[in-house]
Length: 82
Image (cartoon, rainbow, N blue to C red):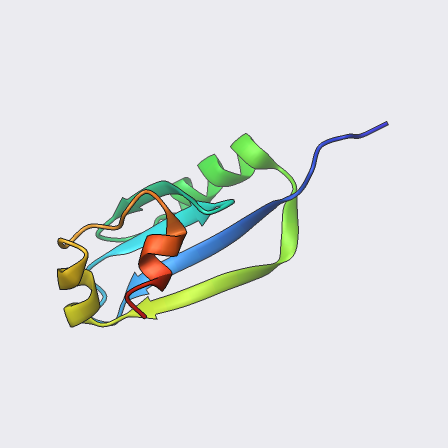
């Protein structure tokens, strides 16, 4: 019997295209100037089971500036600047 629970995924992008990140179950998985195919392969190989909906959040340059030009460890901190 498979008792592995699916994880929730959120992808955060800055509108200028300068920064992106992936959150898994509300915690930062990775961030950088872009998300590559390799990044998604790491995500899939580590977690394997996902909820069917992937949340997408778009931040403005002002919002990422208010976060110190870096994504915080917790997704709720991102939501607080929306």
